[in-house]
Length: 184
Image (cartoon, rainbow, N blue to C red; front, side):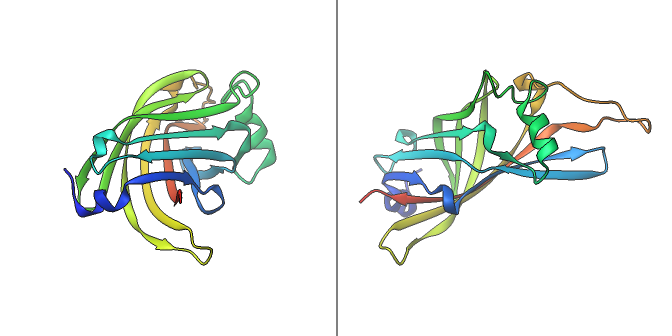
């Protein structure tokens, strides 16, 4: 599907990490969610034509920048039980296809690599708009989310609870709030 929006978006973009968020949440002790984010990442989107099938996206996240607002938990997440940071310092995503699903929704499918394990993931992104900032930068915004199984990426550590269940859910919700700057 090619639309006026797809025509408008043609160009090359750089992810603005200072105005974007790559976050996550996981169920903790079966009763609440712990939320966190990665504070260091970079990415590009190359949209050479108005045909989304020609588009590609690449993102690299510094796994050590994980931040759940608890240093002890963050240290555990960086270690062998979870991200195995010493061996796998980055998390990467490289798109394999982009589809235009509706007026303002795009599905980006690609290869997500966490802890050295690569799995296909599809994320539906809602176009939030475009603007020219006070510095003359043309910006676009997108938001999306997807749920993944951490076990699919070899992250299996857990602890049983006396009341039943486990300490950390297998399901991890990934959340993306993206601001990207169009190259001049």
